Image (cartoon, rainbow, N blue to C red; front, side, top):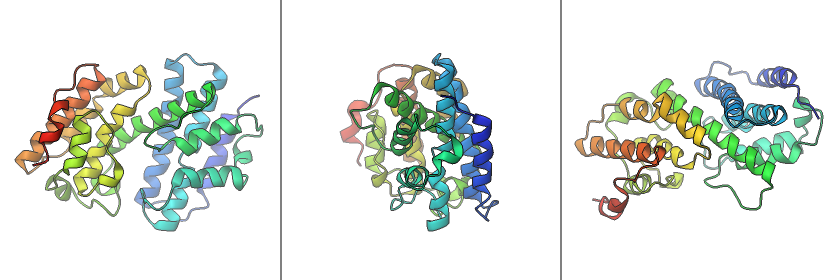
Length: 272
């Protein structure tokens, strides 16, 4: 079986033309994000010394992983809508509506692609995946998270969480909810349902580092200084919040360096 990535990318460009709001910030962000994730998947595959076939498959999954986001924007007018499962909707578009054949003619990879996309944004991967399914499910999750760090550093603040954070000042005057802080200091991904404040949405992204599957992914985060850049992006007005953000940064960096988490045993004493 072969994968024609040039054909797939041309088809993806044609797919995007169906949406009229090409200059809408959320749309533009997701287009750029998609191409970066596909590139990350290719880079990680190379670093993991995968076969050419798996490298191409990983890049294709990266190209298609967020295809449901564009419908989320059209239907709800926002991103990260808790009532809209963009991963499941993307799988519907590709496999129930038959769109997958626009991107790849052979059907031999369908189950790997379907599961990788369906599970890419879950808090945890389900058990029972076959070896190659697990490989690509892990790869797309890492590639996606790596670009989420870039997005939170480079994109204008008002584009990061449309409708939830509207300005730098709003972010800098915000605080972190206890449940979010506790999870991050304990080395866990925070539960998105615990997000209350604007800063909660931003702080949750730090926790993505705890879910990276591969050492090369963790090394990329350290090499690009993603965690430091995220923490340094804003000047937190509240002294307690400044300290908490510093603690989160230190905890994540220690985890990435395989060092002991410095505040893990303080998790029950930070609720205020």
